[in-house]
Image (cartoon, rainbow, N blue to C red):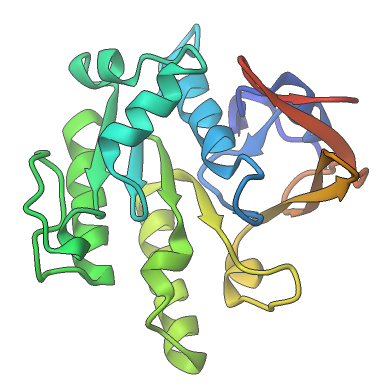
Length: 239
């Protein structure tokens, strides 16, 4: 199946878009899974910035920080040449702080989860408020595993379905970052429309990172395992 280009969201990584025949199907949810150090947050930032810089119709985005201070995200993005503060000031990006409140620190951002109020409903409420504020069409939750850690078995599945249903209703094209181990079987993999796995292998003193599109509904895609590097420009696939 090949969707029209207008029905896809580019990822900001040209080679990955080619593997997806143009990008991620619009309005769908994609799980990005990999251990620490594989560049999940970097890939997600590529995705949001690509939407904001879209030539014809800029697509505002939302980044939900669950395991990282929002200022750290801004600083790390700057190292790759992405000025997130500028996009925030232009109402093209909202960072939802779901990190500070979890640690008992009073958040300072407008869109945040208060101390003692951390749960799935509150986080999703903040996402919906942010979406309405800037008419966002793209979303990153990083990592979704932090949102679901306290849920097990049937409750975890119900929680994932609740999140997926709201994202579908809001028509947000979403990346869910996850640090699940490759050997684990998470229900997130099955309810997500797409699943991209990032891995790395240590070869002597070198690290070899690899990307594979495990599944992507509504489109044909490459099944190749592609090496990639994280450079000063972000993620570069070695196709």
